[in-house]
Length: 469
Image (cartoon, rainbow, N blue to C red; front, side, top):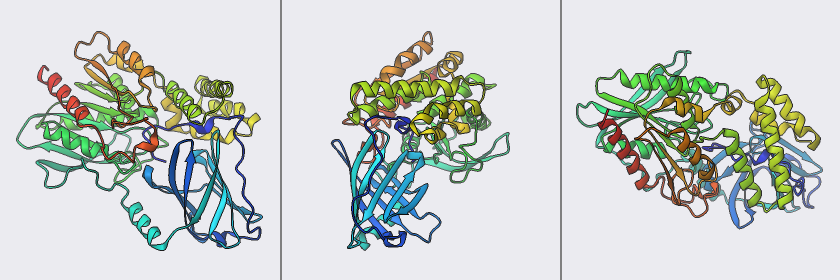
């Protein structure tokens, strides 16, 4: 699942959790009996989430999952098997599983879904062919237009650009340029965790598409790139060290500065993109003129994960004593991973901790090159070393980068830089939408992509700091 920041409850081992079970039904069923499009409602506490599975036994991806409200389509099951007529599915990246058995009429699959400490009933019924066709069309264009998305003709110029990085990868992007000769201030937009496209598309929103429009209308040029391995960009994101992502950002900035129509230039990083900005700013040969950090971690990244795990425990109504054990286990796991002398040793240590629970494989998502190297970034030190003007914005209802954890660290890192500001937007979630709870399930349900006041604050900050440079 492409999230700005992963809710890593899948590495939690909860005493109240259990393996999902199939109901009674057709014990002679084969995978062919499950062929077709199925719909169900996943109910967890007070939330109801529509989900779909598509079963195509003769395809390379035999079963795929959709969560339309979250903008998730076509996530292939990593394990598919039928035993005594029961269909068992696993999605390793989600730490999720489903076990169900088709009924004798072949019209319903009765079973249970599990993820982390949660196991809940989930019944699928066959979709109407017209509904299935409509869903397929939606999946082909998951970034349907939202009210704030700009419509051509734009009152500014757009230009397709490419960057040949120093390690031989070509990145593809879009430059937006205010009308006129300039020179203008400019921003490199850096997306959050996971391989993202240049618009940072998720949950049928395109935050960077909207933000680039608003900034350019305010007289600020922007450039945004597809991440490595996405869209028009080469390379592989998951196999890229975090320092290399910082190098990519620094080279994007250098590309902007070579243009005669660009004056001051800086970074805007969302979520882990703020970490990338800090790495590039503290280690590049020429520092950015400013940084905007949107919902960026400032405390260690491991603390963000601990906060996410704690939130998942509360949502699942895990008993307090068990929740404390799970959080302690999560901390032990991350400490073992990050204190080892190498990635391989850290991964082995993490797996050893989970082995007694039969969950060693659940450490795998933490062991990849990009993810592991992100844990080693000293975010506070990077921003302290930078020393330039920073606008750090946090959402008061953000459950992915919790303001209470990270804003005080940002204050400390930016202390003494008179133009820097740390602002908590009271009702904002991780995307800076006005939210009820801040939960990820709300992202796709909220029509606003990003609050206009937040984008105006960003534009005002950039205009203010560049006017004095």
